[in-house]
Image 1 (cartoon, rainbow, N blue to C red):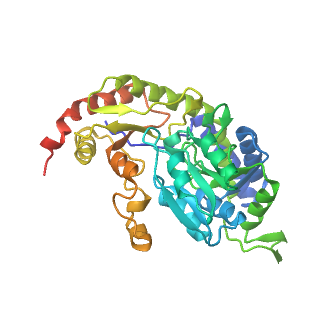
Image 2 (image 1 turned 60 degrees about the vertical axis):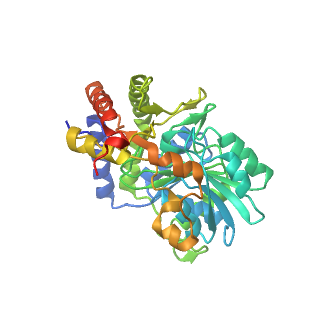
Image 3 (image 1 turned 180 degrees about the vertical axis):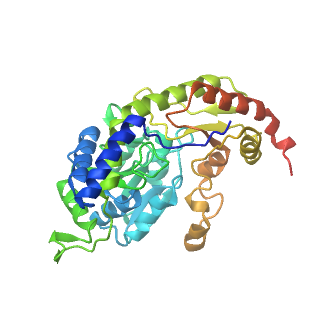
Length: 380
């Protein structure tokens, strides 16, 4: 049995509807800034419970646009080291300085206590990442810290479409939410992104920047923008993926429940607790391995012997990426929680079309191989 770490899902019904609408897009000749983008944006803002949603070409573009709106030039923006490097790179692209921070070992998300230690007079804002689909349980505390210090708060929601905390959707808590629709995500448009906000000025700025900084049209350029448009075909995909999102999340949570039950009393791995007021999106299902387990050997044997691909979030983290070590001088040991815990995290396969048989196969395979991958028996 071959089981990937994740894969996108389109039902037969949605494929039929999508195919018909893409045909209409192609026949119309209107491939950008058309009715399908407007429809997707309208549906997405309603779903998230915000005033505005602006479709763009990627989450990275979304982050850079929002950071430019807040004018982070020569200013610091705090970012958790446990994220894909695109999050902190967006700060650089917008002219700012990313300041990495450590994580809470119970959530793998930004630690508000470490955040407070990173704030200086040069700090202008914070990016919180809802990691692996978990809406950051400390986001309200982080939001309060931002308000107290006059800082903006951006939510990186690349992993957590449809997640909720205290009944509020991700992307509606901070000053802006930045979503990814990359092929591996909870919902996909192949590639693409979305900005959500209640700030009309920010949304209007985003509409300008995504199309080269237009004013009333391409003959009037009022901002330094870029080619960051979402196209009409992507918008068709996104609308139908959004329509299927609630069912997608129910299936992901059901799979997660099966995993959680299976590993309740596991000697070699433990699961991460989800607070009662949170709905997890389960982009990934992380487990924490015992320090005795050789993760590299486990990953290799699960793939080679069982055909199962495991993942991570994120190892190495940003401060251990060669480019950041070269530019900023980061090194191992500077973020002790991330350095200790991320090398012990692996993520189990997660996608909505997984069957109970496949979930059981993953559980049984892991239960068999975990005790066989203790460090003292590691293959050299």
